[in-house]
Length: 386
Image 1 (cartoon, rainbow, N blue to C red):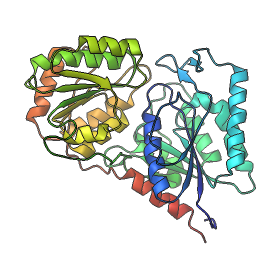
Image 2 (image 1 turned 120 degrees about the vertical axis):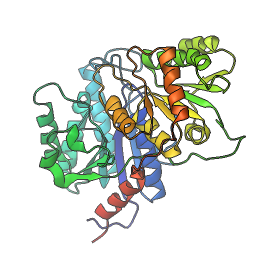
Image 3 (image 1 turned 45 degrees about the vertical axis):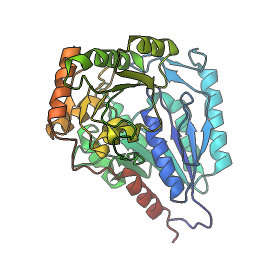
Image 4 (image 1 turned 90 degrees about the vertical axis):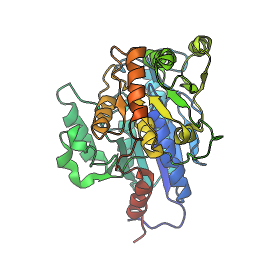
């Protein structure tokens, strides 16, 4: 507990390396924290993306991103591989931000259960917080499913870091769907620090009538990379093969996709297909569409469930990824969505899954999607004055 005469200051660190899902979830939490009266500063280490932080302060570190699916090579804004000098500059900048802000709460998104590549700056930050005379609460903010670890000792390392530096672990999931122990074998050893919040979902979507954005359409969305582009191209051809061939199919291209690929997709689009960049009203499109086709990222899947729209999921399974496939299969077992595997995906297969989804029930799963509200409730409890 801590005595407060002003808003509690939160420093929220996030690093996205390929897609922007981590940043989107952080932004949803930041908006809710601001509305609840916290003073939030988000420190982002990925490429700059225009997101709504609800008035929270954004500090952009020199950006880095991954060039491969295995996160082995990180490059800077100019595409140059980062070196030790670059790492030291960024670590120094992060410590400067922490010392200037003097937060009561320090939140690291995913770390220590991921983002191992960023230890060069996060370990000095956590050491500084631990040594602080007015030590902040240190919290890890993690999604429901962790990437499976294949190298010996990695789970032990995560456990040691959690025990050494972290007061709490906020798991943004619902144990009724999947609990953390299914993907982190040492969960029981830090059980007293783990709190489930439910899924963090953007609730800003608005349901409307026949003139509402996305009404009656098939919304196809994907992230960046070759897999996302292939999904959009496959969907364009699948339209004519499905019972939804007379509907508008709206293709939403990720903001990180290169202009050349976007232009190619526009040129390929047949009549009845709209190609545009990802939109800020995506959740409203889901509220009003006939069907959503997407990859299986945390945010999109949970927004689809909240919107209760019919859905086909093509989970991304490249590189080290396992979480999208696992989450999609758990939900498919509940009968709330259709799955089409990305491996071997054809227009015929996708069209068949579209028809199955349209002939089935809307996505209705008894899953807790009030993760932002529960997160706020916990933060207020932990910072309540004595």
